[in-house]
Every structure is written in structure tokens, then in C-alpha cells.
Image (cartoon, rainbow, N blue to C red; front, side, top):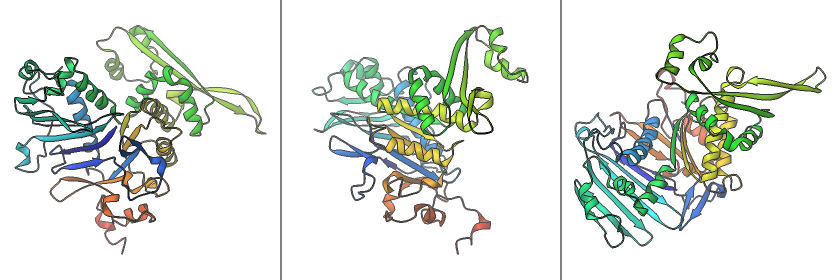
Length: 421
């Protein structure tokens, strides 16, 4: 589980940003929205607001880079370039490394792991373990000092074999180190997704057979009036696969989908709904082609259902950029309430998301420490802060005060500059 995620000098974030999912103990509202693990209380969900181009997507990209570099740095050791981008609008930071650190809480341990990295090398790296604090290793450049007593997997040979563009943690995990693998497995539980419909749909299709009954139940609870799904996947050759495309599909798109492949997996999904007569009596069933006849919102919720169920069942952390894309505000509220529920989220999965849906700025739904804002200063640097850090009272209308400009993180429109006077 994530307790804190800290980073600086990455994309539009110049200064250090600390994103915390630790509960603010001064707020006693919504007790279902946090859980206890070891001696800390962590939030089950958090929402991030901000104007367009404020840095919300860059915040999610920080998670993506951190996750991917840890998982792939050893495998990609032959590639010298590390895909980090510092804050480029400052003459000092453009030549400095990016900084990342995460605080993780497991059932019986806590870890603090971090690194500083440029596009050419890892300049620093460290791993601490709690509750009895132990520094397991500390790295400066190519010099690695490991705690051989408590971190036996970190041998002198592996220290010397670690390349300058590879994380020592990743090297140890590749050598089957038990502690390093435990840390990396926790980091792998952080899944970041843009709300891109095809990507989300593919996830739903690939996990449908695993969560068939639960996906249907979730959509029914969200009031989509779907009685049944008919799902079919079939391997095809190229000719059979291209025959499934609508007749008006451009040849360029067909070529893009088929070039370089010899086997294809075709997915067909239908939804079953009830047909009624003029008097409201049920007279039969009608099958709809899911991709051709169902709305974008239905398709998006189907894909999201697979993501949500996987996170809820396995206790993962899910980050979604622009959760409200194609979804009604009532559905966004339903999703947040699902993750905040003790009954529906018994494994304490965590949901982090960006949105423009201001209806969630409601003290009946979210605590102050679950609401974050991102805004840019006049130098183009993004900053993250929580509503809780502003000392805002919990009985106020957050939405109204947000649009009054009291929290910042709003687009500046000159024609509206006197609107609130």
C-alpha cells in the first residue's frame, strides 16, 4: 500500500512534491474511507483537480516512469538512455537529476525506497526498512554500501556488476533476492491507466472470463439495464479477421491492425436487454452489438469494471488519469463510493484519479485529505497541495469555494475576471 510518493524535477514539477495517502487524524469524518495497517491509517481514494495543462497528466506520468524504470531497468540495460525528463524551464534544474521516493506499507513491514536519476545514469539510490529502522543499502554513483547483516542478498559481486544505468534494486530482484522482490512486487501493484477507451476496453475483454459474473453485477448495480452478456473470442487467420471489419473501414486502418501478424484474436460481445410492448409488458429479449450499438459510457464502464474488480480483489493501487472521461458524474460517485466501502473493498485497494468532475467536491462524499489540487506558477512549474493542508473547514461547500477561486487550480479566463465580484 502507498503511504507517500515524493518526487521533484520531473516534467512540469520543478520543486519537491509529496503526495500522501496518510489519513489526517484531525478529521473524524467518513471512517469507511481509510483503513489501519500496522500503526498507520491510509486513505482508500484520492482525487486530483486542476486546470488543463496544469500538470495532472504529468503527475500520473511520474508514477508511470517510477514504476516502469524499476520493473524494466535491468532488462533494458543495453539502452543507455533513461527516459526521464527534468524541468526544462529553469537553467539549473535542466542539468540536475530527477528525484523519486516511495513509502510502502505491507502487512508486517514498511519500506522507503528511492533514487535520483538522469538520462545517462543513476546518481543515488537507497532502501530503508521498518519498523526497526535499517538502512539496507545506500548508493552514490557506482559506489554501493549494503547492510550485509540484514540484507544478505546484496553481495559484493552484485554490487560490482550493477551498471550505472541500472537500479541496484532491479539487479537484486533479477537475482531472486527475497527482500528486493518483495519491494518490487508491491510497486507492481501500482497500476496507472489513461482513460483511453481502446486501452480500457482491451483490459475488460482480456479479464472478462475471469470476472464474468462480477462485471455483469457491477454494471447492473450502476443501472445500465443489461441483463446478460454474450461473449465470444475466436482465433482467426488474416482473411477471416479482416472480414469482421465494417464495410466502411478505411484500408489504412485494416493494414495497421494486420501488418506483421499471422494470427488474430477476434472478440465479439453482445448485450441482452428486455423488449416491451406498448403497455409496458416484457415480450422478449434483444441482443445489441456491444461495439456498434452501445454508448461510449457503457463501453468505458465495461472496461473500467475489469480494472476495478482486479484492484479490489487483489488489493492493488489504481491510478486513472481523467476518470470522468465518457462517464456521468453519478457513475464517478458510484466508483468512489465502491472503493471507500468496507464491504465492497475488504482488501483496501486504493484509487487515485484526476478529474474535472466538480460534483465530487462534496463533504458528503470525500474527506478534505482525499482532495488534491495541481496548479502552475508563473514560471511554468506545477505544484500539488491538499485541501486538508489549506486548513479548510469540513462543513463548507468545497465545490462553491473552488469555483470562487479560493483554492486556485482553475483556468484563468480574462472575460470572467469580474464574475465573482
